[in-house]
Length: 468
Image (cartoon, rainbow, N blue to C red):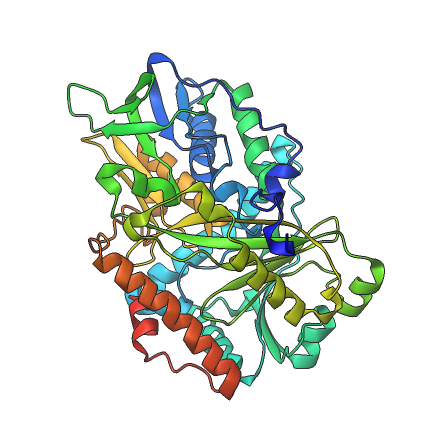
């Protein structure tokens, strides 16, 4: 069996090393009535429970999870705790204006610090380390996009959070092949998302939050003035007096009322074994910066606390009907491609062994803007669509959701994601045709830029469709 097809591939390194045995909690059996019901025990659901129980300790809260806490994107992401917007700062400025864009960006900076504060207060050792992040240009064709981002941050008035590094300055930090420049963000941290999500679940239980696992929700029914909203499961029913929160990220597409509200986009990751000292002398990376390049088809890296390299990128292609299946988590061709890319970035990895490879869906809305909403009439609420920036995005969404639910909406006035609901995705097969066209188109543009040395102009149909 080749390296990418090993049987252990398909498991998340984060859940394998989270310090928790991940034994499923009991499923819901029978009927319950609580103040708040949350569907989904990932970052969005757990953070929402955290802020609600902190503000309203007398409220009863139940969380229903299809698998186990952290099974989805919260236990499979790249571990970036970053204030990065889900779309480019220039596009945010264009859509929402300077003041709203500044409010959103400031809230994201604040959320990085908020996560660090909660980790310290709750005693969760999630290997949080604030080393910043680098968006790197791997060739001259990547520099125009860096310059565009740098100009947008200056227009926002947040340039003090960033530094422009030329090639030698960037290579002093991380010695990446072909590196010729970087935009550095000082606010980004890296962390162990498995330790965060599992630790947060354990502490919520100690505060009286009930978590039911292996409890897939089959249907959600809106409430009205007389009856509460309901979550229907195979063996039970959960009713909510105050709010029923849908916190299912990419899996939201599996709930009929919101099937076209998000589309599941797969991201994939491979992780090396702990690397020897001679490799780190060649690569550097002493400050554990999070790293990504300007490639349109996405890549992201981190150096783990035990000296491994994590290399991630977009992987499994979109499947007709927004299908999500376990076999999509372990595509050997995707893993082989990521390992080859990692060795191209770092020639010192030529003989390194990769111990883990996995994939998983994240949620993308039609306009790539997260949706955070609460309807007082139906008593339904939801948050999803972080487009790969969910470690921080989910924390911000949960803080907004909790204040919407207990009635303090003005706290977040002017932040564009508050009460935002995107237009729905196109019906099939048009959704499949459009998404696959864009996926293939962005990869072609990356290959052409690398071959010719010329940057994409931003005018091609895949680029314009992707932005809108």
